[in-house]
Amino acid sequence: MVKQNKIALITGATAGIGEACAHTFAQNGYNLILTGRRQERLNALKVNLQEKYNVEVCTLCFDIRHKEQVIENLNSLAAEWQKVNVLINNAGLSQGLEPIQDGDFSDWDTMIDTNLKGLLYVSKIISNWMILNKKGHIVNLGSIAAKEVYANGNVYCATKHAVDALSKAMRIDLLPHGIKVTAIHPGAVETEFSVVRFHGDEEKAAKVYEGFEPLVAQDIAETIWFVVSRPKHVNINDLLIMPASQAAINYHIKEKK
Image (tube, rainbow, N blue to C red; front, side, top):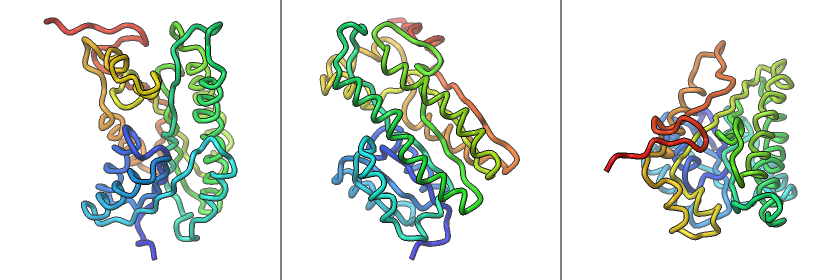
């Protein structure tokens, strides 16, 4: 049986912001449903969290791009696990960095299917559970790319602009049911993000953060915790969080050597 703690469901929990959120919420007494594509990492994270924080952890290994996998895995949860208080739609990625005319169809499909359609699949199921439970808070991970565009960021920026719009629309649709919706838009965060963008090329990925101090995953996890822990009458609709050295999407102050 699940202890009577609050429950947070975090997608993309095997690394980066998702993993940092798992630790932060477990530290604050939440039981967790963690999803990701890497079973070994999910298993190790579950053991670590349960031993360190004495909470219950349920893991689901699937790819949110595939609607049937989302439906099958989420609906396999026992009734007590379906009382989700917080959904963190963290799973997302960028692939490729080419001008629109040279873009790769496969990269485009992966970004649209993950960042947009996957978020929709998960949100549809969990929002209905929240409506039944008459409470809940959905946190969507956007990006500075939801607010600005940059050279060669075309489709990735488009997906994050869509997440921004969806967050606004979800907030309206779910307001009558007492469900809060927040969009968190980070600037540069040093995680696996750039490694994925460059298809595993760590040398290229490292250059993204060269010369300035980016955010780290824990910065975003702590921000999400702040948002979720506000009183019942307070909702943070939209939050843009940047490194102190980054003023705009493509403007950084380089560190003096």
